[in-house]
Image (tube, rainbow, N blue to C red; front, side, top):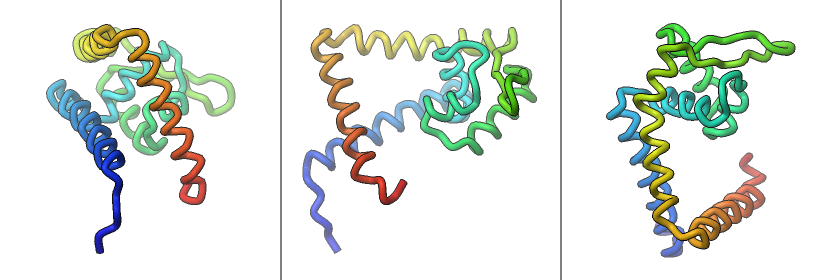
Length: 146
């Protein structure tokens, strides 16, 4: 059965998959799992003391996946968990975790910043505006699956 997929959707799906592949390849090259990369990146973005739920939201990754990767990073000595209100656990980079982030995550952020620097201000705004619009409409129309 051939379901008619519009060319724009085909191209967008390809762009989305290519983006995921690039980040997966980066994580592999850095000797990190995708979820460990996401956690370290999220702590760099959110700051020390962020919560697991914030990392899940930022990385669009399941709580179970993030939790098991957090435990692994904790065992390896890269992060520590400190209790907060109720059952909340705040995530902090250790000294070795900060070195790992500086060595492996900061250069990726630098590359990403260069990408946006190579776009005009208008192109950046348009890319972000249209990406947000696509996600908003997709989520609205996918409510029956979510």
